[in-house]
Length: 398
Image 1: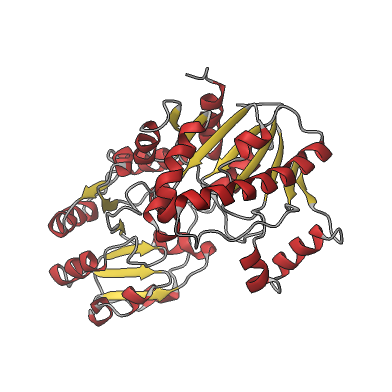
Image 2: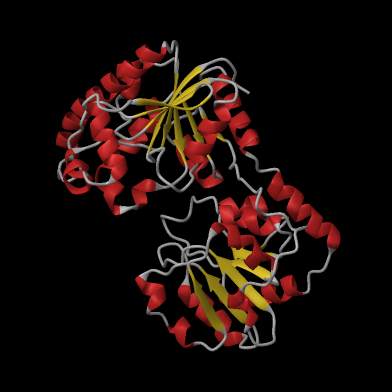
């Protein structure tokens, strides 16, 4: 594990965002043995105009005026920074060449702001870790001159419209100039290797502290009125961008004796889908994170009916670790990333395979297999992932 270094972390998520993220967990883990500065995204003109009354944006604006602290302690040797410079909103520009020229100006402003905090904290010989921020981080290596510049890929962002226009050209160049590139899935690692030989798979960390199968939890009220029959369950955001509603429909029609429970908020596609007309499909709506283990405990089998597309193909599905940590037999869509789980998860490619493997999973009462599932999930700690990142950074550059 890297120790006694000064580390600056930039990325796509503000520290004050309520939900967790890989970047925040990596920063927390690194701060146990290093000095860490977590940099919030700088404000741009559009954000200031549209969100200036948001309390967090208002605090950021006040910090730029010297009314509040720009560097805020999070813990021992761990700080959060509100950048002092405003960036221009550029993604509307149609030409990538022109975008790049103006983005360099943004990058110079961002770097100058970070340098102010680095100097104030007395950081030296920094490691600069960029969590997938293709554009704002593009010129930081040139302007900040870190000891090592690390690019972290955890999503195939260029499959999304916002990032595709300029990112399809700029992200490969960004990856190529990084000293080290790391990814949390095998598919993303293979993509990094196309542009940078110093690319490494570093796995995914998970906080599974809530997911203790030994705790006896009451049956959630939403499950109390289910008719007799096996319960096949999914927990998470129901979005057609990442899940296949037609696959779920085919499973429900093939096995009307199974109860299919979908726990989570829905996008418009799911909300208007024929699944709502199926008598054996049940929607719970949004549930609290603290309640997720109760649902999992009372599912007979867990499912991840992932759609395979440019957005999902490189994703590491955290929910699989949560399912396995609870000891649950699990059926999921086969992808390159899911090959990591092939010894512990039933992998299907078609609706027919899903039904056959769900039947097999329902009959799975093997206790050693259950223990193996739980141990495998619990090996995916943030300590192990950050250790792999540390190893990648410490290797000699090729």
